[in-house]
Length: 226
Ligand code: ADP
Ligand code: MG
Image 1 (cartoon, rainbow, N blue to C red):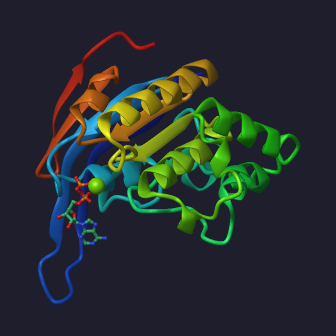
Image 2 (image 1 turned 45 degrees about the vertical axis):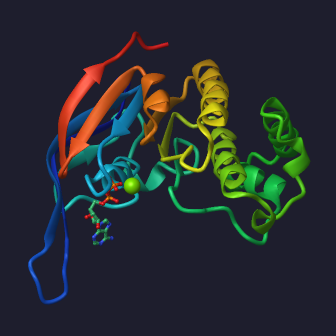
């Protein structure tokens, strides 16, 4: 059994421009995500972090190159059980309250038994129980981001890709929240990849990928994996 969850080889991404030359957003990227990895992706805005994460999560296909998920299967079987994505922009379902949003992936995976208890336990773990019955429109940006992350954790997938999940949190709250997320991920064997601008958040991840102008210019080990 391989422990490689996702692998990209020589991938490039070019977005079409109507009537113009396509813009190259990613070029020549090789990378791997292994079981239980903890990776931070850093780099300036526009360097391609989100695009790379979308490709590694199977949400979009690259223009060229290979992406595969050796330990997980074909692209159309990744979600919601094996891979969860936390989007940079708000992604909670407006008509569902917080509890409904968190339990949704479990319902989609036909694992409704105990879903609500699990969601309540997750909310309690992060001191967010009072949000359970609130609608997304009643949440602050930072609360909505945390709920989206809890929704990703709820199915205990093999891989969570989170795009700037703490961007609307103050750094103290961000670190505290991330500690909890990493603790749950370690226990459940979930690999976590986070794109972030927060140096403190990046410092807590075992590996650091640095993006610049669509290239993965550096991949460094910062600490032993948990
Ligand atoms: P980052 O997450 O590092 O800010 P992105 O991956 O979001 O970078 O974007 C990289 C580049 O690709 C940017 O120049 C952005 O404008 C462009 N881009 C992203 N998504 C699209 C799209 N769907 N169509 C056209 N251009 C896009
Ligand atoms: Mg981005």
